[in-house]
Image (cartoon, rainbow, N blue to C red):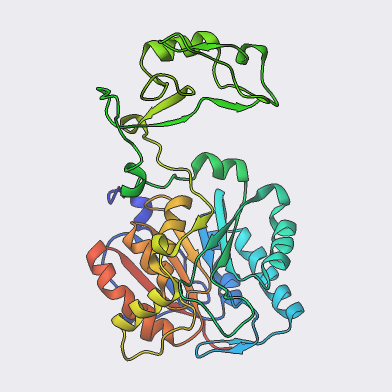
Length: 378
């Protein structure tokens, strides 16, 4: 829960500097402060970077994929070398803004993901690579190409991977996950799920190789090449506490019972994100068209469910999220909906006609304040 009494969240995120504030476009009168900036993202970062250095908990960007298309809102026809150099230089500027436990998430397709990863390894260091998320961005079959491309990638890097690991948030238990917990033995502690009691024996100690005797006298040894998770003494304690499951008839391989009531940490984020979980490009288009039937829809918008998952893993309420390729404003919308602040940067006029309009009802609903700046033309 965002603490509205925390004075830090009510301070302006940037001083403005050489930017011009358009006060007529300010949204809200009080509340946690966020910023919209219209201008070329590199130039904007040069102008405000010192204000934001080491203050951003999560950066998400959806840059051009260099696929030789001229879209409604931007031109994506640079050569590969120019595209990669531009993006690398931009990411270097972004990396300085991250908190020690902050992370950068970049959407990309299969044509450029490997080249981009090599560049990010150079910028952050290979040790600070966190993961590659596979997102099912399309559910329908694409019949015009050799293969139907139904997924994209999200590369995840941390300023300090160890610090990020300590602070990153788990996924909440959804109804599907909760449904896996049953209570076939009527345990008074409620529904539980059984997990394996044996692991690979590569780093095992002698105490992990022993015989487990079930209450009915049946003896169990770990499979070849594996060992028990716990020592014999610990297994006996767990068995006495009815935390070892030997199957309905008592003859099954011993497994450990994990109770739903004791699972306070949530689920470890996985790397395969389905369309049913976080939406698709098409669902994002439909949502924007519903909100703004008079606006030209972006060709490749990201669903708010996708961005919400990212920022909820990477940050907490009150933290600052930055998107320097704001596009249709999804990252800003997701930040407001999840009690976070944001810095959104976009050069096109749609930052007013689309992003600004999109945020109006959210600012009112979530009692926030958004200041609008622009980078004056030179």
